[in-house]
Length: 176
Image (cartoon, rainbow, N blue to C red; front, side):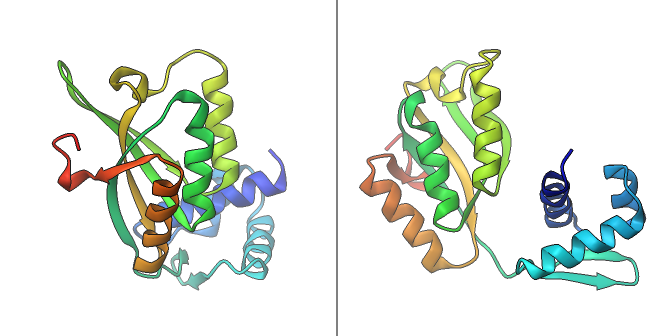
């Protein structure tokens, strides 16, 4: 694992934690010394990540996030563009799910926060071991997405509309 990969992992670990994560726990998880973690945190702060140090560990300074469930449609060849569009506009893709006529709701966690996460996801799909969930529903699927503010969320939705992916807000779906 490279230093950059470790720092991305640290960001994800801290972002997803509901309580402070200790330097010792991070050091154990990433098989490095606690001093390496301290240096990584300093580098992440220099890269404008708002990481707080507490007596119990590290926390990500979380701004209130806006969350929305959207329904989109596209083929496999647009998956990467759809996900990159969301993260490029300041969004995070938490999951994907489909409403299947026989099996009901099928959901998978995605945790995509960056283009790097998109690339990793696409590499997994490229192995051919599994097919995307949207294959079960002729390309129609939904995502839970988050953004730091309403304005970012509106920009994400507008860009997805412009590209022809957006169908509707999930709450409005009876399948659009």
